Image (tube, rainbow, N blue to C red; front, top):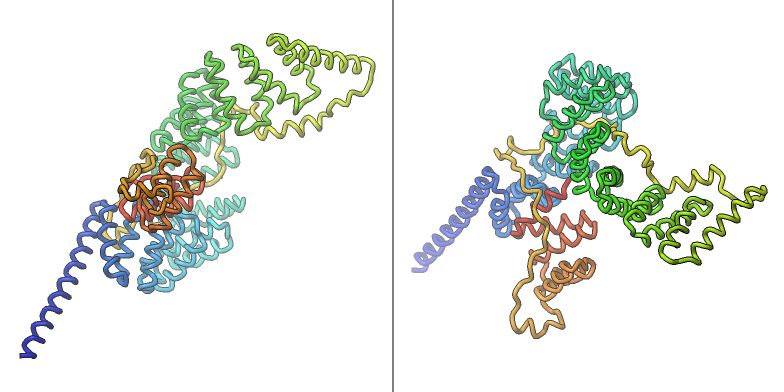
Length: 561
């Protein structure tokens, strides 16, 4: 009898165990499927369920990190991958993914450590060697770059990319002779390598060999027609050989391939200013100011154009923004004062002239301008004082009395406080750094998981989540703020009123009471972004996304670059 009952119990235990194993396999397969079809958020949901039930299995941690990586949640992906490594330190793909996440966060020391381990496990993997060498390049450890490239070339001597890596290090060391030598070796192996032609063009640009640079960049474009930087550099070469139409065409193509390229927009706008195409130049400067409101040179150029096209109020607005950034810019302040005077805004003009006199107390012209405005506004006594001071200084100068006027050296010293030379506003901005795409740094894991990538929405509106409903009992105890929801709601009110420090305090209290309060984590992340604390914000948004706040990933993608 007892044996019969025991047999039934054992059978039940086996069935329950099999059922649990079946659910685990089923969830894992469903998660993989969601991953394959780019539904990264849904796959995270499935992998999180497995991790909650069986946190000792490395695979769901790893797969969830892959999903987060594809959502550009590099912090969350790195953390999950680290957990997977703790559980199974012998899987080489884990170190690869962890290294890639570190590279994306500019943590090159961690990435080098990861690739050291990956190479120890899989010594013949060229990609791991290349990625580690790239990290040394980013750290400006050029001796290590040359050492690693030499080691790799003994094994992969027909690799055009390795010579380019070596060339980039030499060019950054200002050794153009060795750099050019490496580039030519790269082209000997693969004459169709667009990046090699780009490198050669960069050497030509450095030597101001504009026609040769244009030829090399034309070849680079032939082999890599969808790389925006090639058109950007060729535009510079064409400007210097007076091919203005070709340069504008290249800037058009750059912007077509990379719509948010501020440098291309700025230079195209400057050329349009030079040829009198003011309206289209304004469109470019409008674009730059929209995405970079504190871009001083774009603001200054737009102000000049607005002034020229009769939009005086718009010009005054732009000059005002510049003065908020660079309050010592006397040139801008003088321009704004003159414009304010022209539309009858005498008080602002007087304030600007007063500010300039604080920097240049011996300026008779500025003092005379202020005196005239004092008279227009009925401030006769102040006008008399300014005019009397000018009269006395002119008399002293006539009779050879030392009036302690500033020397040229002193004037130059004060002018440096402007921090920027606005007389050069019509000049192009030149990007003199060597930048290439390092394609060997794998940013997806098709070989490992069969997954595909997808660009998420970067243009999501960043808005705080709404308050949550609370019970009558909670409402009665509102003054004590004893629950996470009460603190969260107060934080929402403060955040929407722009009181970010106060909001942060409330969200901190809500999360202290409930560490997995997803809405509070999301809103605290946005609050931290408003306060300029990007790294802390991304950590909160990562956890909020993992807990189901889907828009957290779009916000992260927007700020991850």
